[in-house]
Image 1 (cartoon, rainbow, N blue to C red):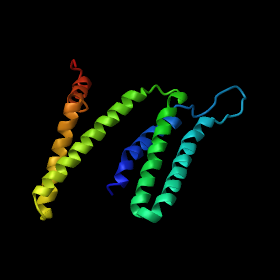
Image 2: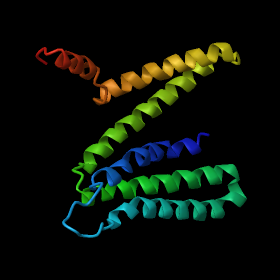
Image 3: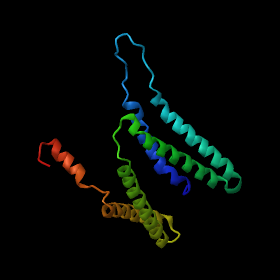
Image 4: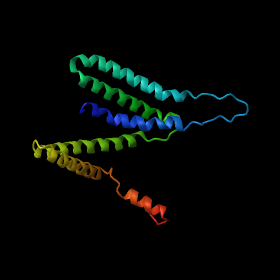
Length: 174
């Protein structure tokens, strides 16, 4: 699971980035008597996924005999991360204004915060000893606290945003 989790960021990005490819095109063509034209850009996410799957299969075939499930998990992480990178890079061509460095910086903040949270959870659960009834809540509390603290330090935690949105809906000045 530790190796497989390396691809979770890529998986989350793919789930998010695939949506603009299908939402920015018109649903119907209302041109006078013209035939409905297919947009070749609709095939880009499929091609990106196919390339990611090809990379997954290649790395998996090369590593499975030596590393077993770890090799397959690493292959999956590499393939889905490649797919996410391809989709992120192609958004601009679809007319979606995206600042790639800003997106990557935000993801980097989350990655660093997750690493800090993992270290804190491991440290706290190790202090609890072999008792899982103590280790799980202690590790969970330490991990959540460390994640929130790391995001606050890195500038990625915006606790005022939900409150400001609520005040804006009520007509208050934000």
